Length: 244
Image (cartoon, rainbow, N blue to C red; front, side, top):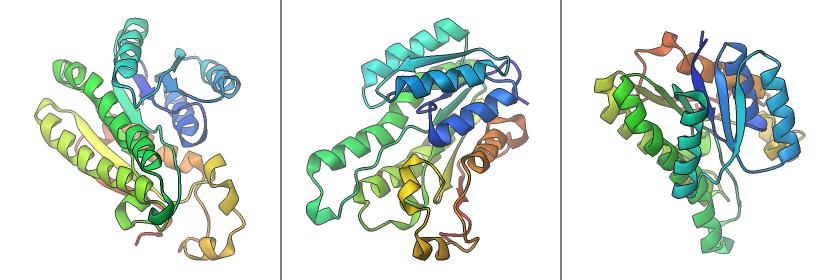
C-alpha cells in the first residue's frame, strides 16, 4: 500500500508510535523516527523495522524546539530524498488537578503535544505543497474531545490538535493533501500500564477493554494510504465507544 513512500513517525520508538512505524513499514514505507527517550529501545525498534526490508533511521529530536525540528527534517529529506507521510505521535503527560498543576507542567505538555505538531507540520507544509501530495495524521485523544479530570494540560493540547488539524486540512486541500486526526481512548502502552487492572475504568468502556496499539496502527495505515484520499479534516475516534 505504501511501497516507496517515506513516513516520518514522531515518537515512533515505543508505544503507539512503534506500532504505527511497524505497520507502515510492513506495507512498504521507509521510516524516519524523530524521538527522545531510551536509545536502546529505539535501536531495537529500528532493527525490527529494517528486518522488514525497508530503509529506516532514528533522529534524536525535541519536537518542541523549532530549530531542532527544522534541522532534523532537513536531514531526513537529505537521507531519504522525500517525505510523503507525517505522523504526529510524540506526546507526554504531566497529570495533576488544576489547583496543584505547576505552570511549567502546563507549558511543557502544550509545547511537546501541540507546538511539536505545529513545528513538524511547518517543515512538511512547503514540501507537500510543491509535490501536490502528502498525508498528515495527528494523534489527538478522547481527552481532547471530552476533557478529563487531572489532565487540563493534556486535554488542552489534544483539543488544540483538533483545531490545528482542521485548519491545515483547509489550507492544503486545494493541493490534494489530506490532514486528519485520530482520537484514541485507552490503549495498552507503558503510559497506561497502571490502568490495566482498573475495573471501574474498563467498565466505563462500552467494549470492556483497552485497545491494542496495533488497532490504532491499522487506522493510521488507512489514513496514510490512497484508500483515504477523499477524507480530510476529520477527527476519528478509536476508543471502544468511550466518548460515545
